[in-house]
Image (tube, rainbow, N blue to C red):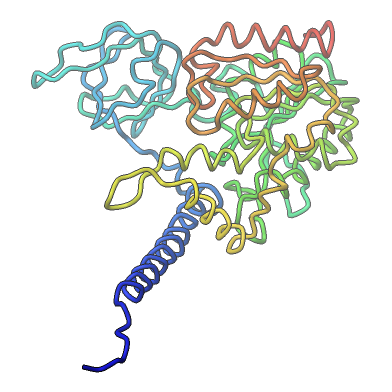
Amino acid sequence: MSDTAVEPRWPRVLTRIVVVLALLIAVFYAGGGWFFSNVLDERALDGASRRASTEPAYDLEVARVGDGTIDLLAQGDPPDALAKDGLFGLRWAGGYGQVGAVRAVGTPVPDGASGVQREFTLLDGEMPEPGAPAELDVRAFPTDPADAGLGFDDVIVPGPLGDLPAWFVEGEDPGTWAIVVHGNSMSRLDCLRVLPILADAGLPTLTVTYRNDAGAPEDPSGKLRYGLTEWEDLEAAVAYALGRGAEEVVLVGFSMGGGVVAAFLQRSDLASSVRAVILDAPMLNFSATVDDNASRETLPLVGIPVPPSLTAVAKWMAGWRFDVAWGDLDYLADADAFDVPFLVVHGTEDTTVPIATSEEFERLRPDIVALVRCRGAEHIECWNLDPERYAERVLRFLRQTVGDQA
């Protein structure tokens, strides 16, 4: 019998298992991080992808058009806004209208299906035919300020990268202009709902574009920077207003436009000209917004939620690949830099930009922030669910901050 000791096999097997698991974990995070950093680029960063995303995505069908009503069917899962009372746009090929109060849910329609009946007004084009594909539109107006009953001029703001198209609506108080900044929809249509309210307040309005918008110069990187570069275009718009008689400005920002406004206030030499700020569902912390959205994503094939650790890796990769300065995109980290009154409106059911960031802003700066929580509203839906209350709150804020002309 040999005296040579036999080495136990279990330590070697265990070592191999640990090595294999480590390799699998590395592959999971490397591959998953790369995949989700691409998703982040396509959905939020790449200018060309964002412009392409503005194409209609019809998910409804017109079932019947009555006298001041329309019956709509969902194609698949219905959009949340379909059965919400309020005022929304409705788009179809060749026309645009507005849908108002819900008249009935489960209205009988052809083929034994069921739909939603709502009040309906045609704004543009021909009446839709039964069977026409359609989609709801939170922006509520199809083209330009004329749709909202306002006269306007197309003007050009000279920007640092080139000409920036803008809409100008005259007002009664030439000394105080409102400058309105859209979100990452890449469209000034975000802003049409608020323009009649600002006109009622007597303020001239300048509704601006910025880099990467259709018709505006492209950023050299081709990417959206959520304020870190776009604030320079807003600065050009403020300079335009000051050069044409404005003595002070009110800034109004929707979604990503809130980040552009925040970056301007923290960086621009012209920030002292700002009298007050109105923000609608503002993206004040892009990193927190990405985390919130990622929490509702699932892994391909297996369908389980994306773990926060994978989101962190994807963000790190996106920072490296696409030059995303995550820390600089948390405008609340320097909330003490703000020194003007803010009115912030935000939907409690916002799944695009979490209301938690606006609540944090209110907590950090209760001395300057008035937060209006819109019960049941999704992203930039506060006006849609209650246009009269929205207008009343904005006008009251302007009377308190700007003066009697509001």
